[in-house]
Length: 266
Ligand code: HEM
Image (cartoon, rainbow, N blue to C red):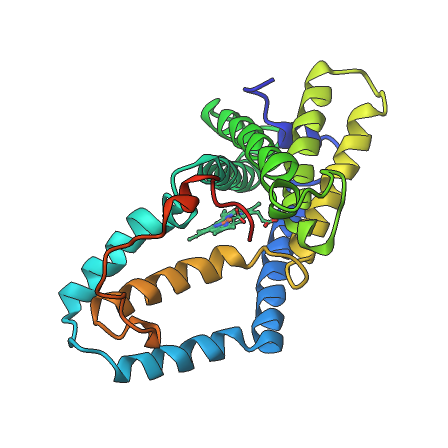
C-alpha cells in the first residue's frame, strides 16, 4: 500500500486536469482566507507598526550580515524545530504534525501534477513520502488533540469537547486519516465496491474544510509565527526588546513552591 499512488487509481474516473484544478483551488482558498484574515484582524498592520515603534528604541544598528545571521538562526531553531514549544512532548507532537503535513502536501502535489496520468509510472519514493507524512500527521495531531490541548491538559475539559479553535487540527487529522483509509481501500482493489469512494468523498470534504476554513481556523499561524519569531529575535539583537523592559538585574529566585508542580495552568 505504501508504494501505491492513489491518484493514479483515481485517474480511472477523474481526469488529472480536474485533480490539478482542485489543488490550485485549495491554494487560492488559502491565499484568500489569509488575506481576509489580515484585513479583518489588522494583525499585520499592528505587527509592522509595532516593529517600526520598536526600531526607534534600538540600542544597536544591526548590519545586514548581523540581521541575516539572526534570521538564519531563527529559521534553524524557532521555525524548523518550533523551539517556542520548549523541550517536551508538545514540541515533539508539533514537529510530527508539521513535518508530516509538509511531506503529505509535497507528495500530493508531485503525484497529482507529475504522476496522475494513466500512462505514467510513479517512483516509489513519492507514495512513500505521502503515506508516511499522513501517518505522522495523524499521530502528531491526534496526540495533541486527545492529550495536549490546553483545555484538556490544563483545564480538565473532556477530550470530546469540540470548539471552533479545534477546526484546524481536526480538519488536518481528518484529511490525512481519510486519505490513508482511502488509499488502503483502493489498494485492496475491491472491484467496484463503494468503500473507497466513500473515503474519497470524505477526503475531499475534509480538504475543503481545511483549506476553505483558513479565515476561521488557526491555519494561518504557519505564516504568522515565523514572521513574529524573526521580529522578536531582531528586536532582542538590536536591544529594542519590542518595547519591553529589560530583565531584572537580580537572581531568579521564585521560592520552593515553583518546584511543587510542573507549570500547566494557563
Ligand atoms: C506545515 C506547517 C505547520 C502545521 C501543519 C502546524 C500545525 C499545528 C497544529 C495542528 C497546531 C495545534 C493548533 C491548535 O491549537 O488547535 C499548532 C499549534 C502551534 N503551532 Fe503550528 N504548525 C505549522 C507550522 C508552525 C510554525 C512554522 C510554527 C512556529 C514558528 C508553529 C508554532 C505553533 C505553536 C507555538 C502552536 C501552539 C502549540 C500549543 O498550543 O501547544 N507552527 N500547529
